[in-house]
Length: 149
Image (cartoon, rainbow, N blue to C red; front, side, top):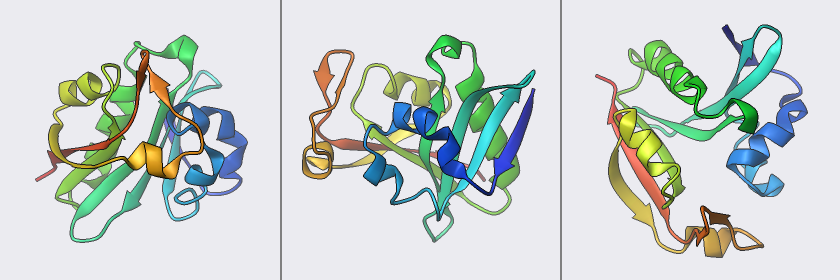
């Protein structure tokens, strides 16, 4: 298993990116300013992650996705552990914004994140179509943070 940085042609992984962010124009807002990594396991790309520098010691996970057939096998946690290991000296906080979902919030909490703040109506105001996870419409963006130092 190897995690590699992707510097060029990041959109070759668009189908994977859209698993975590369903609208391409939203991905376009951070794909070029972010650092992208992919997890390659025996020649198969199984996961990806894009992080951005949000200033003042804050690093943000903008997109983290694992191909559906490889979910619940620890690949998401491997990506987070990689980010923490490689950025803990440069940043003090790792944060992620996600929908208030019973699928994603517990995952991040198990990885040591705690709820920080939220943006009311983020998904309603920024996405053309309603987004549902586990049968529940996403409305507010929930931010979770984890201290790195």
